[in-house]
Image (cartoon, rainbow, N blue to C red; front, side, top):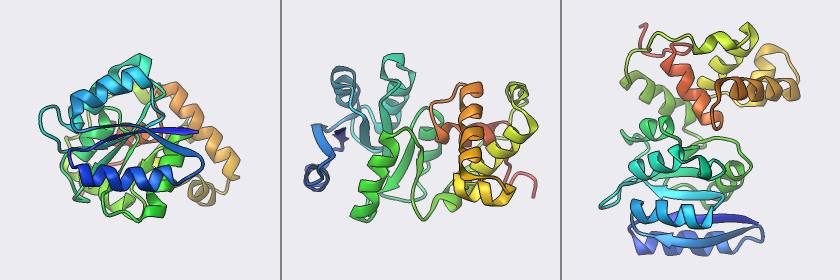
Length: 221
């Protein structure tokens, strides 16, 4: 059973999500909160598999709550999905950087929300279905110049190539097709890169790809 915590200051939004999620045999909502501080508190107490976190809430917002959850080693298995009204929310890339596993716009189709919860619960990253590449590229162009880094030195050349493709928004199947590999081999390379770079999930690989300059849309013209 996938255990979900809802964090949104709008009761109607929470009610809609709760109804949708609880109708599924493999998903249950274990709590609802209206601000980020309470989200962190309940996450620490209940250890949900997934937190659906509104990024804009009064008091402690979703970004700060995500930062606190991502920095808490006891919550390593808690995966945060950021919910935003706007598909180009300026805070989403920062949320990914501090530990979110992905994000969804609030008008996402119900089937995509259910898929998102299941994808993130099994440890994969979710970068909003249908708009992944455009959004990631947009945030990359707005973020800082890549910093000089030696952290990629632990990777093989093939693994660097794989991480760059993850940063471009490609799935394992798409990476396999691009590099003429089996999907299983592509997945193995992604997993090894995650272990070597000590990142939580695929979303963090995307961040590393941008921060180290492995992928630089908009920066090089």
